[in-house]
Structures are given as C-alpha cells and as structure tokens.
Image (cartoon, rainbow, N blue to C red; front, side):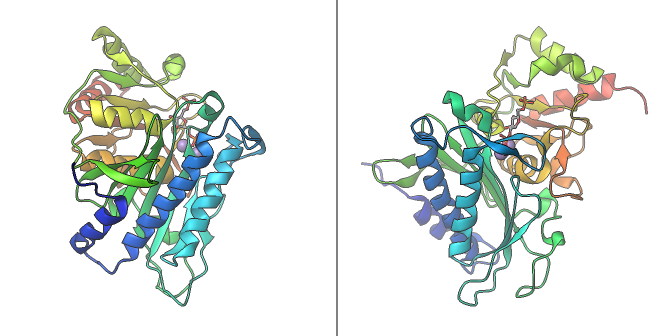
Length: 333
Ligand code: AHG
Ligand code: MN
Ligand code: MN
C-alpha cells in the first residue's frame, strides 16, 4: 500500500522550506483545512436542510448572497480566530476588514483574504462550488492594530494561496511559492490526503471557459478571440464557479476568461479574493494570469478591498495567443 501523507504531515514537512519558518503559516493553513472540512459537511447536506436558499441580503459587491456564503464566512473567521495565528481577515462577504483578537498574547504576523464560497448560485442545483484564500504577511507593526495597508498588497506579495473545490470529491490545492500540490479529502478518515504533487498546467489545451452569453457586450478584441476559439473547435466549458472552471484548466489545459462587459466595466471578479490567489496558483504551475488589458494580475496595485479585475488565466500558450489577439484588434488609444 502507498504511504498516505495527510495535509498536516505535508505542511509540517514543508515548514523548513519556508523563509520565516516559525510555524505560524503552518498553523494558518491547518486552520483553513479545518474550516474547509466544516464547510464541506454543510455543502454536502445543503439539499437537506433549511440553510439552503437565498439570504435576504446582498454582499458588498451587490450580488445576491446565499445562506451558505454566510455560513462559510463565519466558519472561516471562527477557525482562523482559534489558533491566534491570524491578525485579521478580509472577506468577499464583509464590507470592511475584520481584526482578530490575539489569543494567549500571541502576536500574529499574517492576514488572510478569502472568498468563502465561490460559485454559490450553483448550490441550489448541486453543482460544484469552492473556497478561495490568500495569505499575506502584515505590513503594520506586529502587536499593533491591523491596518488597511495590510490588505492593500499585490499578488506578488502573497506568501500562500489556495482553494478548496467541493466537487465530486473535495480537494484542497495550495502553494507557498514552491510549486502547487493538491489534497483530496478522504471522508472515511476525515483527512485531506496528498493526491497530486507538483502540479504543472499543460502548456496548451482545447478548453475555453467564458460566459459566452455576454459576447455582444465584449470589446471587439475579445469577440475576435472568442471567434478564434470557436473556429478552432475548442470545447466550451462554463460552470459558473471560477474555482471549478480554473481547476479543470489547471489539470487539463485551457483558458478561462472574464472580460469587461457593459455591466461590469472593470470585470466582475474580485482581485483580492479570486484573481490574485488563483493567479498565484496558476503561475506557480507554469501558467499565466493577465487582465484583458494585458497587465499581469499579480502586479496590479490594490486600492480597494473589493476591487474588480478582468482576467484571462490558464495555459501559457493560450494566454499568449489571447494577448496577441488583443494587440492586433484593440482600438488604438
Ligand atoms: P461568487 O459566488 O463568489 O459571487 O462568485 C461567482 C463568480 C465566479 O465564480 C464565476 O466565474 C462568475 O461569478 C460567474 O459570473 P457570471 O454569472 O456573470 O458568468
Ligand atoms: Mn467568487
Ligand atoms: Mn463568494
């Protein structure tokens, strides 16, 4: 029998690779793993309990909020509050950042950003959803109050990022900047077990993932690129959970696009909670993540907790090709 490596064992074994290896980052990743198991349990029984359905509120970005979004948000905050390794969080579901009280005088150096439940409109119809997270070293003085600047950090400042996909099986994928590894939840033992080591995204592929219903609202260069995908008979897959769509592309190759539309003139997806963490993972796996205006996602200056960005992410050769279309067809400035 192959030796099973649990997420905890793996994180511990990698701790020494990490520049500031004092165990805090290890603790944070572990807290997130625990929250993921709790959220997973609720997602799996979503059809059975009254938690299913739309809460009577909208999140700060104006989208309808499902009850499970709020549940996942609460559980992540609770789990990150337990060990004292996290000084503060910023969540897609909260308008402002939240300071986490210190535990037993511990002085935490990290803040965590997350989208507690991504693709939540899929919950009602039993389709995959996810959780996305990013971890930064705080910029403000350790021991003092956390500040807005702790969250206004570029993707290149991330020390770790990951996602959990609640799919046919539940998978946790993360990077600390030394490759990407995935862990599959074994429900019989309640542990995430190492299942995919050092993931490399295929250099190219034949999947494209975009809400093509918005085609007429795209800029001309994006319409030309989408036409090209159709010409080449690329296979269109669009789940409506960015995590699930990007996960397919990470493993099978392809490109995911969310361009600017008339409704979302700066794109819909959030830089902090969605684009940067997934950008870090895909780059670590050998892929690319840029905006539809061709700026590297991880280089974008953060000026707002709920800042949005357009995105083209996936196999490097396909993102290169999209870039060439934009250069060729975009209107001169
Ligand atoms: P969330 O559920 O966290 O609000 O995110 C949904 C996002 C993303 O996961 C998905 O790719 C996109 O919204 C779908 O948007 P459209 O329905 O506009 O295509
Ligand atoms: Mn989301
Ligand atoms: Mn969400």
